[in-house]
Image 1 (cartoon, helix red, strand yellow):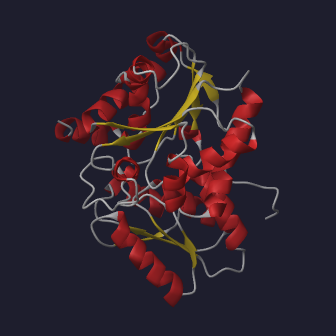
Image 2: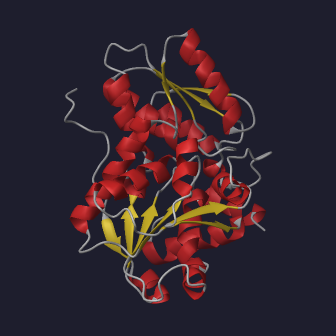
Length: 320
């Protein structure tokens, strides 16, 4: 496979009429939900796998409750090398089946991602596999940064603000690097998390990286207990705003998005959508933290594969 090939697509950028009407400014959606593996993860992970795991590699191992694992499995299948994905027991069966469909070996280990990650590191060493970190690696950020170059080529002018969901911090790091590369380094960036999977927000409030005692949010794909150090460094910048929504608000956003845009995304992605649907952006404008006359809002629809109609019904029952 030549270095010029890639695993991700240049995802659609669409204008949301309904969201624009709600916010009073143009809202653009970067539809990472349409990526071949179901989420933005294929950008960074595809880039890393291609750089570190050549065709002669013994295979790759990744710890992931969902999207990073799917991206790893997809890239490995395209390179025709073995993939082992370690998932925590909290991962939906739906994701486990999708991983197996991509030809990956799936092992369940521990309750949360951190447990699965310890096992992935052990396997990488004992079986000489290439370890694929879900979010904490410069090559992953470099791959994600490419999204901003696509946006620069497609948007008529610089965005008034960018909204994204944050889990371990990989997308956030890539976005921040990309914004700098295209000369948009001062654009406000709103980092959205759900209560109970809020490792970045907890670090921002404490003034240092902290480890959450547990992941209590249903947005399991946001479920890293500690944010990566690079993301924490970026969070100190004056243009970065960290906000929280409840699982219920994220779920309502998922349902509204399905009604309005005809796309079903997972709860973790609903956190960023809730910035518009739950009035977070409007509140930040009222507080003077965002301009009253806001330029076009750019929302990263990160996607996600741990969602189905059955899972949506399950969330309706548990997100009180």
